[in-house]
Image (cartoon, rainbow, N blue to C red; front, top):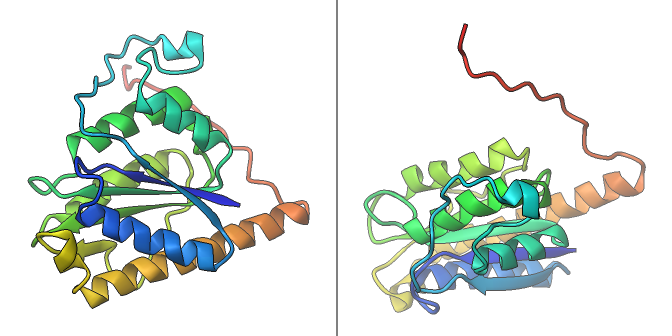
Length: 205
């Protein structure tokens, strides 16, 4: 089993990285393989609703989005990390989520996921709500912890002093590992994920 962790910060070794590393270390102790992808700090193109992904099977813009979507197909769980900007996740991470989930949503469906935030003071709960909505539309079980999934600090060094925040990250890793093992055990015993119905309406009478 493998969990893909996405660092949505513009800093590869900042506060968000500390949170993700703590989750990853815990998962590995539980026997779960991990891989972390830093999406970079270069400009990224937003989804332009061109619909080409329906023809190509991937996003028309070839960047970290397609890399993540391809990796997602062979992964069993996900952790998306972001700093909090103006009570919101980074625009860079939201661009990745928009395009990944629209062009390759099937690669994420029914797989457990967690949102991990880093903030100096506030805005983490609102940010977590934004990211979690991507999970719920793809039938992804949301991995919880013993407090809101965030760490506190204005620098990576300060995050290491946030003992409760780091404990929260450890418990995310433990809960993720437990859920993955439960799902795998169910699959081995003939219990696949449900086949769901879907009706699309545009509310025009």
